[in-house]
Length: 249
Ligand SMILES: [Zn+2]
Image 1: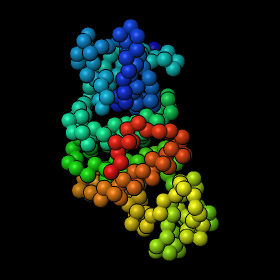
Image 2: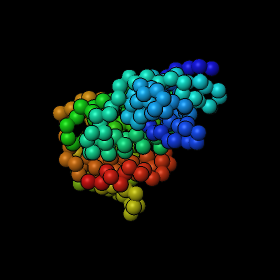
Image 3: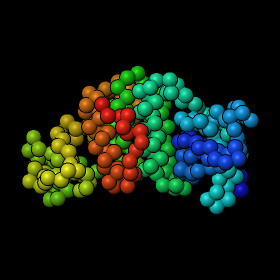
Image 4: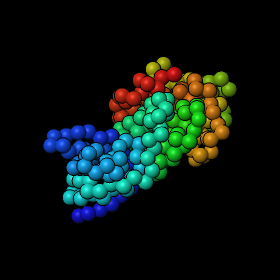
């Protein structure tokens, strides 16, 4: 059948016979891999719509899990992101994270909208991109249904209001915070404070556009980004991210 969907191009690879495989995160079908005969040379305008960072509208021939792209239209190209090395690295990291964290063929409209928001905000933003990316990682966990418990100790259920000021441990394996009495020696845990908890809660409950005038210290934003990526690695089994090595502050 012939069908259409909006999508964000994650990556493209050349395969034999001049064909390409395009990995597209679509609103309707989730992440899919689609073959196409559209090449850079043959159909200029359509080829542009198949480049990474493009938000486009795509016409597919679909049979079961098989997709072929028959036509492509650019809705918005975030090509300007590529003109700034820092933005480019941050955007590459986000798209790789989305690529790894989503399952093939499973619609995830919430993640789709969040990813579009991120590209839009990143394109406009001037500096302190890590704040935006850290917020994205937090919101992504929510959208994927694995948001950590920030309310009470994962081991004993003691509410965070009863924690001592100095000691909060964020445990990756336990999926949330631990009170001082239950903090162990696990290597997959981060020492955090009430300030970080407030930031995580703020990110969780506000849209990315509310951060236009917000800039965290890069150290703090990087800590959140790293913690959430570790968290996704553990709970969603995303493996290593190639782009992550560029992200270290
Ligand atoms: Zn406890």
